[in-house]
Image (cartoon, helix red, strand yellow):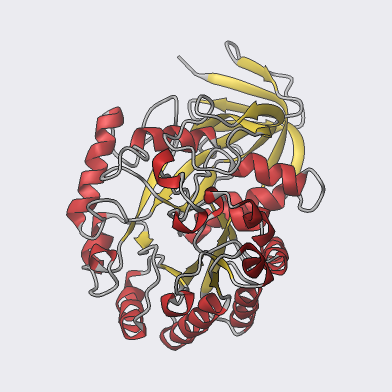
Length: 433
């Protein structure tokens, strides 16, 4: 029996065709059958949904986030992560390899896939369950135990099916970085690197500047990013292996990227959603959930990041979902482990703060959360056109909800928006790839 549904007069955002329009969208058996201004001939036994005021876009894609399972199941399980991602509008999720044990060999990857079998009895490349469709991608570790000392068997991991390579931690040994890029070049897979000098960072817990002095917190200087990024870009230029730059957080970092792209370096870049929404002034609350790595930037950093994403200097917005238990995060700001959850919060907060006031177009935001991250992963982006698989997100920008343990699907609640009311919520996702 055909499973057919019609979304009547939904606002369709399609970054692939750079379009924003009202249309009727017919979906049947996991495929987009029609996208028309107004569909008069509706197939029999089709479920019709009035979607006036609702947004339909390609499923969101997260470039890098963290899983608690295996090793830290009290923070997040693959099951809760799946539900959280789908509730936030994500249909693809790329996980960093810092599980326990890490994904630094084909066996670690196989174990994660076996755990996904336990969720739904299917392979990791298929939707885990009908209620929460999601495609998992896995980054393979660049170094053994993610320790930055010895390379993993990169070719073996590539053959096992990792989406690309990333430690998710700074790789400070430039000699090793050079060898890594030389080895990876013929594999033609993404490699994601975080530019951060841990020597310059020291014990800093927020961005160094007048705010860190006022708040009495150890400062992490902007040159911890820019010095490491400048060195990284020099190596990339010499080796010519395409690289994705993770977690850009400073104005100077943006300038270095802009210059490198003007010189034709094969790079893409991302920043996180938190660095677009907040800056160092927010740290004055001493809210431990604002302890991040890299730290929140100055207002000038934040403005530079917003302009860079809007102009395309930075292609993608990453969530970097990092769950911690209540006990782990309920400590003094300087002692808190860095990171926050975000899969269920990013779209509504970015929409409310950037699209609603007219700072960004709706298509710009959706492109940076969906098609551009997919391209950074070297995967085909979703498109809203007849014959395409239904990989879609339906979003209500007017729905209001309260962020609390009952409304969140994540096992962890480490977010500064806990207890706050948000506007905008995902209603449904489709994932049929």
